[in-house]
Amino acid sequence: MSIMKFAKSHEWARVDNDTAVIGITDYAQAQLGDIVFIELPKAGDSLKQSSQLGTVESTKAASELYLPLGGKVIEVNEDLINNPQWINESPQERGWMIKIKIENPAELDGLMDEVSYKEFIDKEAHT
Image (cartoon, rainbow, N blue to C red; front, side):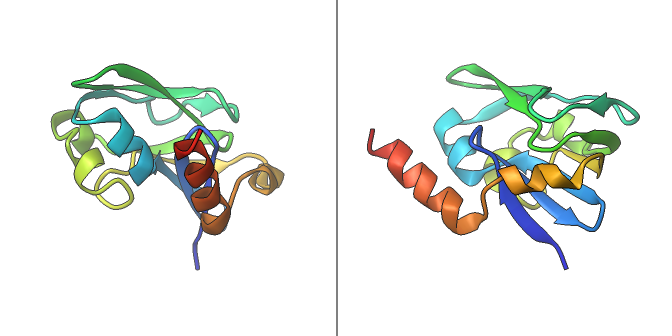
């Protein structure tokens, strides 16, 4: 059974054992607007928690994406290169970005669950 965790930088991680699927939240894609380009790491890359995992460009701006968990990239959603709009249409399904093998499971403790993340974005929206 997988669990969902969220970073303050608005990325999500769907964790199943020692693997995590990473993407950006619905809130983040709504703030960005229509996404027209994405740059992602390559399979085999080892990335540290909070390091840049890629860049998205929308009709509004370009934004860096950050890794909620450190690990080795085991799969990249190559279909996003030609279909970046999937991030807007389905951020947690077709719009996933990478899969990693988690390096340090203790990093999960620093991430929010869904309830905490909803409270976080509610506060952020009212500041």
